[in-house]
Image (cartoon, rainbow, N blue to C red; front, side):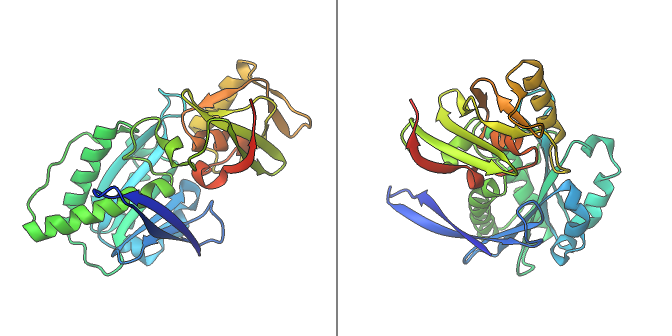
Length: 297
């Protein structure tokens, strides 16, 4: 069990904290991850597509809930495509999507259910419509949904409960690398606040990189290294981006045959995009990049 503290600012401008619990069901952050917040009846489960069989057999996935499919956007460097849906039996609906060419873009997904079976069909239709509305307003991802549902047929008390449910999702989903509600380019704001000269570091499987937050994005610094050998979780869109960096001469031969080297500083749209290129796998940047305590000029 991993426990994270998430700060939030209320209307009275006083800083408050929230505790988000993460359970690594497979013992690894690359597997099925389950997130929850104290005193919240919801539960969010995320997994890469390669772990979909393990996710679908979990009892949560046979419940009524909403789900989000996510994958790289071939039209935007480091961009994301997403699809938001709802179902009475999420596992059954996802098995249908696996046979659909229109849904073939996704390489990871998030499932949202209630831990106490309190969500009804009307509740999840309302949640779906609110999530789509907020995601379209933020423009952080490109939604592939054809329609814009506007389901409001809930009693007033139920709408209040579901609006609170969505508020908790806005805290949980970014931790699971499902950044539907942040405005484009805002993921770096989830990194620890620090002076512009502070340097972040990330090391994995022999690769080692440093980076800084700038107005241009999250910048991996020249001299950093990246893995050549991709894992099964490396999104196709990021692999295409890495290949382009190689063609542009910005990623060159590294100090060993297993590594690339950044020949120049490279700006990415988010910490997760940068970390995924370094690791050649799907990575949650806000969780992996760490402040070094040093600075570079």
